[in-house]
Length: 173
Picture 1 (cartoon, rainbow, N blue to C red):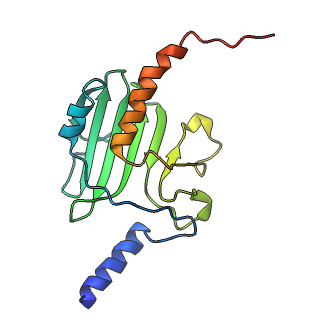
Picture 2 (picture 1 turned 180 degrees about the horizontal axis):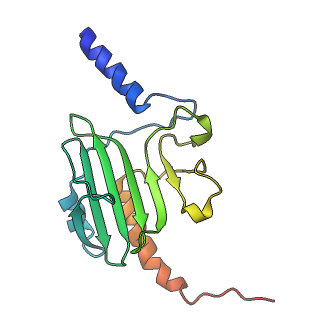
């Protein structure tokens, strides 16, 4: 391996804050998503997948930015940063209501600089809506929902199960 390549690799790790931490969770490599497959496989819940993310910026060679519009009137803003060989480096998947209020956020960027930001599944973590947290350091560990496909499956299950509880009321003694 050439010195130049080593230097570049180390520089990239430092730039992104990558590397093992005390709380690191195994990081299986994931290929970049093929959005047409997701649209086909989840046609019963996905209305359309639009180019561009929440900020309106389009995708680039190294960063996919999409907005998934669900039939239940919610959206999933997708940002996937890709490596040069087509694997997902890290991602931000933000599920919001039709008026833009956060439902949940699944992120995979590491928080190496401050251990207070880390979870047991570092770099994978979930953000709750801002109204549910006291400060932005609060994150939930994310053991299972680490791929876009598994997150869309979660949204599908949530969408199918929620109507069963719409008329649920707690009984008071």
